[in-house]
Length: 135
Image 1 (tube, one colour):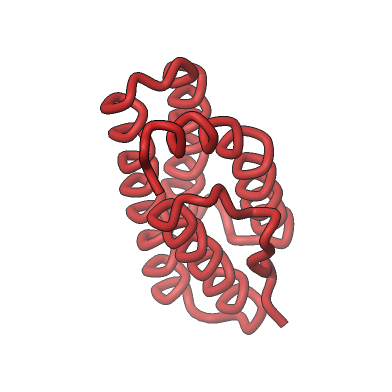
Image 2 (tube, rainbow, N blue to C red):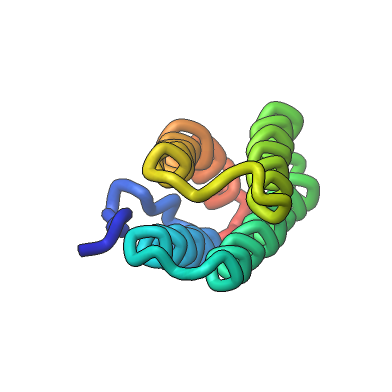
């Protein structure tokens, strides 16, 4: 059973963004699976690194769309991206140095943040971008 399942309520109705959200869910699920079976630090580190890199790329995609189409909520949305990026980078730094481990609490944080961010924040830009012809 997956840690996070894709649900239609998570769709922002923009294929590129939905596909990227699905990939983020897949990476969080991989991290969860590795944690559950006690995979070695090297495996966890690789999955966490991929999650960090993919998250940055995804945020960059959204932010380019916001700039291109002059999305009025850009600054507030970017602030949320910056906050999560810092939290995940801090987690990775602590994990890499042995100060932290991937726990159920960490996984729940990632799951809750992703779902709340998509439903509470990303869905706000959907109508605007779709109205600008993004699909």
